[in-house]
Length: 156
Image 1 (cartoon, one colour):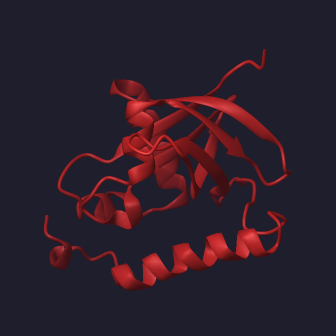
Image 2: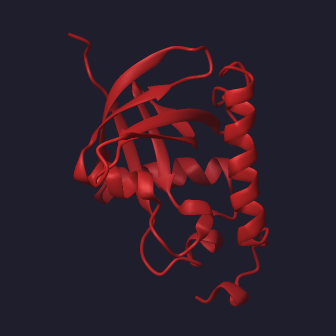
Image 3: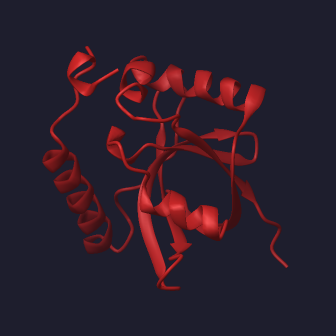
């Protein structure tokens, strides 16, 4: 379905991009004390994901919405519902090891993977609890939106 056919309103791409930039700046300016929050029963949380660039080999960080599924953290590779895949997801596909920072300041090593089959359907339904227009937003994208599971890696 084309974006113009969707009934679910989204702000323009320039606004989403500006908001992302401002959110990251706010996080940096507060020394990481603001900008992340834990998920609740009716609201997703925000975490900071740090990946290694697939071409540069340099660390790249992004703030993402997420929810918890047991010990796993779950997010969507949706890039503000734009058509292209987010760079962080492309980087994780090349190198799935990453680090997350949570609202309490804790960090953990994670291994990323795409949820498939029944697991994807179950996690997608969980995300719908936070956003009832999820399916309409997803139809704006040319392909299936990846549900990304960040599995905790035991510290050695």
